[in-house]
Figure 1 (tube, rainbow, N blue to C red):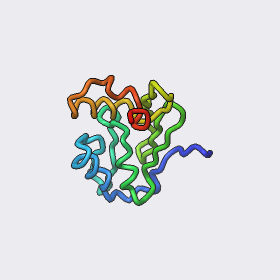
Figure 2: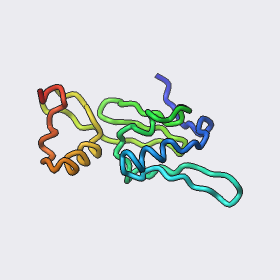
Figure 3: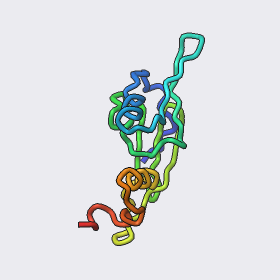
Length: 124
């Protein structure tokens, strides 16, 4: 598999990713930044990102790509590359979701983090 270095040339600044991150996911991890010379860019804030992949799913330009490689989710954006640790199922060993996303799900559902020690398949 060829490693993708960047996707700057693909982004049309449609801002769909900004909207889904802000309104649907509630993270504000992607910001549209206008500069004084009539140009704009997208800024990705890894500290706010939970690596859910919503931005990639909505990007019709193919400018945001995510892939799971072993225990890591790699997200390639027009601004660069980010890596996130994936949660490993304690039963089957499958890496099934980004740890930051699992932590947020536990907080939102008011459940102990240990509730998510098993992947959805092993929980049934």
